[in-house]
Length: 245
Ligand SMILES: [Zn+2]
View 1: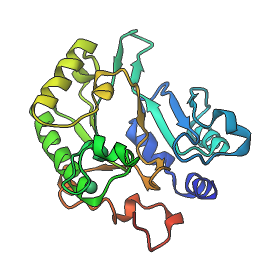
View 2: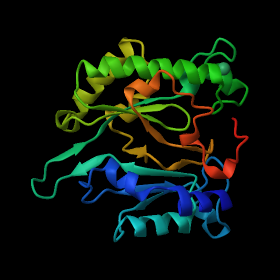
View 3: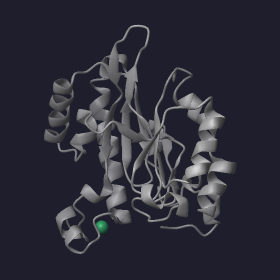
């Protein structure tokens, strides 16, 4: 918890968060999970450690930071649903989620094999590299359909955010069709995220407290050489200089 406190006090960049939303976050809803996976939580929040807590009342981003510091969560998310109060046109940011545990590893096998050994959440460098290749492929696939696609290293796998306005306005049916198309092309995405049923997505520049990595947006030309294990931009300072997985 001291590590989380240090990160959100000194390292978490509100400016970068503001840039991510390009000043157009009129009413972004944020959410935190305090200790569902890590079982690390402030004693007073013991009963809410696994709950998704919505943060939708804040004065400004500094106030949002203060609320994070109150909960000291393992994860911070935002709600992809967009509600334009002027036009009442709803929508949702389109996101594709690639996780290393869904990769069938030549060493560790499939997710089912890993689950049998109670290692459903763990992953190795081979899987991390394979999921990076998938992220590059999926980026290229999506760039044939959309203009603005941004890749985020989530601390485990990769999230691909499609920022085109037309993507935001896709229906559930349209999203499912697209998800199936992507799966048929061989990408192992989490359909629940793309279809929009799961509305939350990890906040870029926040701390992934399960693996102690910072969620980081990457440029396309950085992806190829991106080293998730050693890239300093993903390493919170509390890990010190000897950080590895
Ligand atoms: Zn493996």
